[in-house]
Image (cartoon, rainbow over all chains, first blue to last red; front, side, top):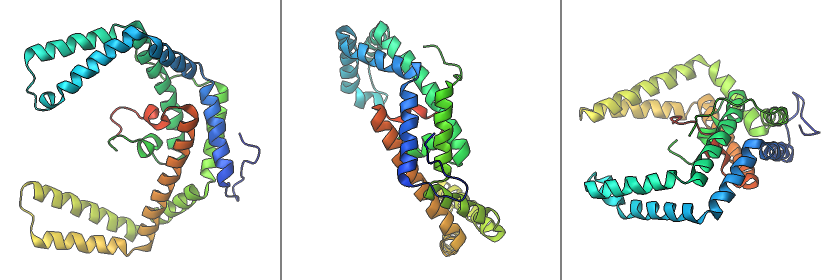
Length: 132
Length: 129
């Protein structure tokens, strides 16, 4: 908590609120889940076999993007894409990254729920760049 | 991938989250939004107007999908929109809500830049839209 937390009659200055956000970030970065996520990302980055599998899958997916959107890909193309996807997810560093990301997401969702409930706005939805 | 259970947050993270909440609740854009929200909630005519506007928008959308929308329906919707745009309580509520959202986005940007990953994207629950 910041030293100059406001009482009910005060408006918190912008700097005080941003400092609280930075303190919150430091605490989040200290969690085992964030550290595991960073380690998994680093490990994945250094894993050439995993990166090659990922590149091959993404390249095939991009080349098929138009026909996939039209639901017009051939059986052979679909099977190849599925094989490449299986090759990606079978990489231990990919599986570890996906699990670490899911664990970190769970922590972030819990704290965002606390923020949303207190503020009365869905913090993740209004700040996210997704479909909302 | 194992689906994680709701995690028990470490005490230092709970404390930091509570401090952030306390400060956000005292931040000018959030205070202004909550004040405007209360004024809107106690203003029965304003709430009734928003209910009528929402119902009219839903009706017109339905009629449009059936290609049955009449000029009178559009005129009625525009009249209600004009009434809402002229209502001080409603306008304040909408404007302060947008300002609060803008402020939360700035806070998210600060957190995300420090973390190196977008916090809101990680925090978004599937199907929240």
